[in-house]
Image (tube, rainbow, N blue to C red; front, side, top):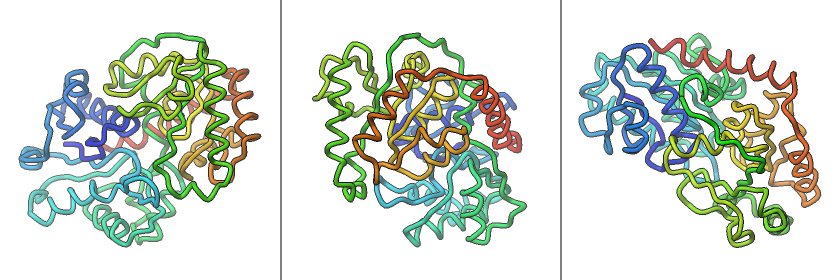
Length: 336
């Protein structure tokens, strides 16, 4: 059974859950991913479960994975509630005699004591904890998690094509995703409204050559500014991945759209809302393509979008991708 942040149906979290599921299937497990959704379960061949009722009873192995559930942030909904599912199962004796591992997660920083305490508790229960970057490893170390228990790799979304079968639908369009209104801490940037207008104006002026992307069922924040543009909303992996994998370039404020695009050899650029996104661009050797939205300017957006228009996949990108995919595989290899 895989425990993770799947009830929200955020594309990046669902993608990681799917990749972990396919890895486990290849090793002979029947897999349940509660709340991943019926369409995704059908496509993956996993058992559909809308709740956790009875799921722990049948599980031989419990994998905690997907997204930033070992972290806590001041903006969007924190991941602590998903760790709480595991902690409650342990307190109720539902995990007695079962193997538990954590993998594919970002860890820290923490602003809530509850989130920090849950990260400690779940790390204590787990045989191993696989994290996607060195910063996450350092954050767990500050909590006293033994170094020998932590496995450091790269985001498992980099392995999308290895584990999931689909055919990209090629297009010459640039994908735009800029849904930032829920992140209240960004309001300290007095240019935020001007940046949002600039992104909207660009989408409107280039309506025939952009696709507006949402990593959930909500509509893009850019729709009102560019109503004639093509829309791509996430509802199920089977439908979303082929279209996402076919774009020319990606401009996004979020992490896993950037990672998935990169895994498909698509140049990606960000005005980012969270530090974890900066870490990814450092990993791929393109820190210049990621600007912190808390301090960004309209000029930053204009520079980044011009770069996206002309960017091409380079041999050095291919080399780095293969290195990171190897590192990402280490976060799955210890799950047997």
